[in-house]
Image 1 (cartoon, rainbow, N blue to C red):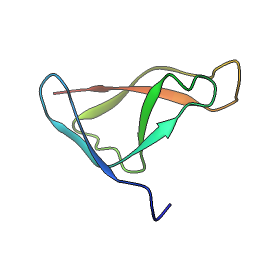
Image 2: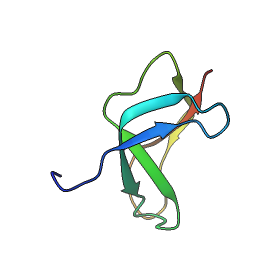
Image 3: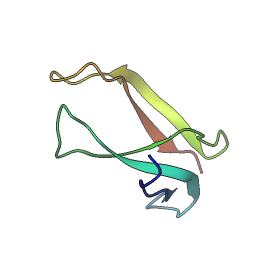
Image 4: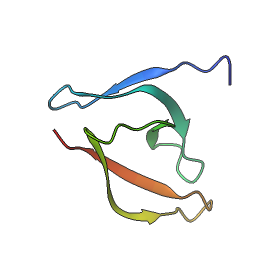
Length: 69
């Protein structure tokens, strides 16, 4: 993991910073889907929405998030 780039994730609509500890991820169930993950999501600007879900090709638990600002 040392060679992986760390990203700042911002909301494309309001430009609020959601995380400065983001990493690009690949959803093995659908490699056309672009994902970003973080190990330290902020609680004041980012919220989890909807139910957890999986794809038909893997058992990864996926959580969608939304900007709260």
